Image (cartoon, rainbow, N blue to C red; front, side, top):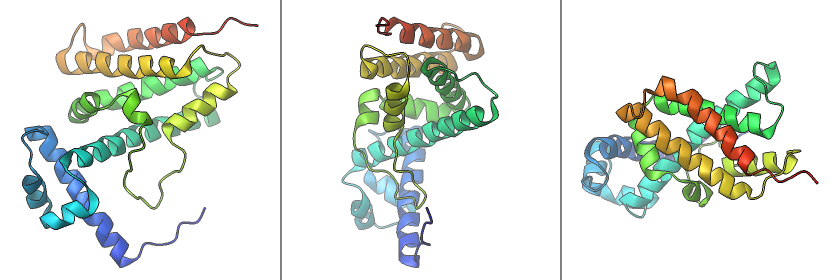
Length: 215
C-alpha cells in the first residue's frame, strides 16, 4: 500500500510528540515516573505545557502510550525475524510451539541487550496491557495488524489446539518478563546466557501442558 507523503504540519506535530515521548522515556528511566513532572517533560522536550495536553491526558497516559510503542517495536522486530527465518528456512518453524519459542528467544535477546528498556518494559507491561486499546504514534508506516491479532491467527491455524490460548499467552508473557528481568538485572538465579535455554525449555513445557487431547 502506497503511503501519501506527510505535510509540514503533520511532520511538525509528529516531531513534537516524538520529542515528548523520547524525553519522557529518558526522565522516567532516570528519575522514575512518580518523581517526573509534566513540567520536567515539557522543559526537556522544549515545548509548551499546552502542547503536552494536545497529545496526552497526563503523564500516565504518556507512559501507557510509550510502553505500548516500545513494546510494539520489540514485537515487530521479533515478527520480522520470524518471517525472515520462515522465508530462508534458517530455523525450524514447523509448529506453533516452534514459532512461539522463536518469538520468545528473539524477545529475550532484545531485552537482554538493553537494560534500561528492560527495566521500563517489564515494570509496566503485561498480557492484559498488550490487549488494551492504547493508541501509539501515528507513524505513516504503522501496521494495522497487532501482535495479539497475529498470535490469535497462529492459534487458529495451528494443527495442535490449546485449552485456553489467552491463559497460555498470559503465562508465557509474564514468565518471560519476570525471569528475564531477574537474570539480566540481578544475575539471579544465574546469568542470562546460562538461564536463557532453560527459559525456552520452560516455554515449550508450558505450551505442551495446555494442549488439548487429540480427538
